[in-house]
Image 1 (spheres, rainbow, N blue to C red):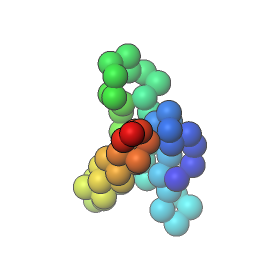
Image 2 (image 1 turned 90 degrees about the vertical axis):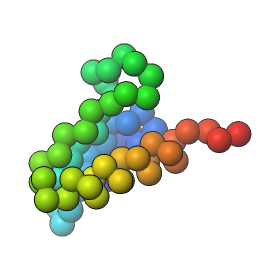
Image 3 (image 1 turned 135 degrees about the vertical axis):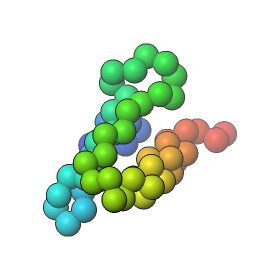
Image 4 (image 1 turned 90 degrees about the horizontal axis):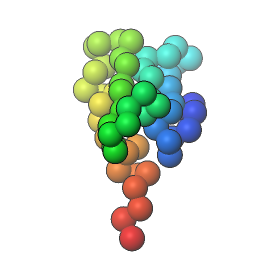
Length: 61
């Protein structure tokens, strides 16, 4: 992963190739962001990673 994980602006790579991009920049609704997946064979994995990163970025205080 490269980018700003807390702000949901990052890319996911596998073996040096970009396989997905996550962006919250274009959405104004809270906790809404886009996930662009470049390799459809790993869609479930990318979505699972995105959900895990989202869960880690929220303060559970």
